[in-house]
Length: 116
Image (cartoon, rainbow, N blue to C red; front, side, top):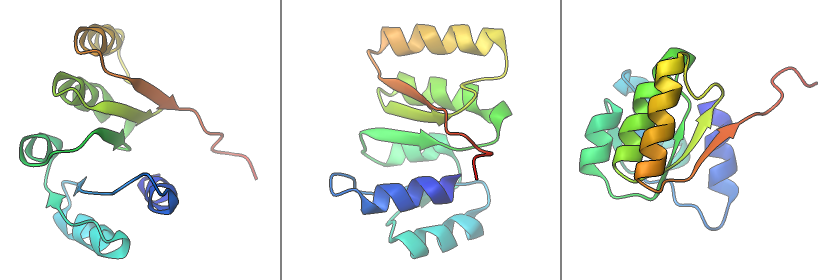
């Protein structure tokens, strides 16, 4: 889904892609080259510490969403996250808490994956 997000953001006149992170840095570098993204990071915490930006798209595997959403909210980034927001009740409660505490906007991408 990251590819879909990148295509849509690249077309939007009000969006500037400034960074990408992936544990597979080689894959991230190829992606960055394809979409002219200037910075590549090996993980989201390094990106949060090393880059100034307003909002983030989280398109990781489902099990990884919760912790990344919490970390992004704690740095006051607005968030678009692929469904589900998290895979445990505890993670969802924590997300709700940090989003409220930090006055962050969060949206879940609920596209229809099986639509022809």
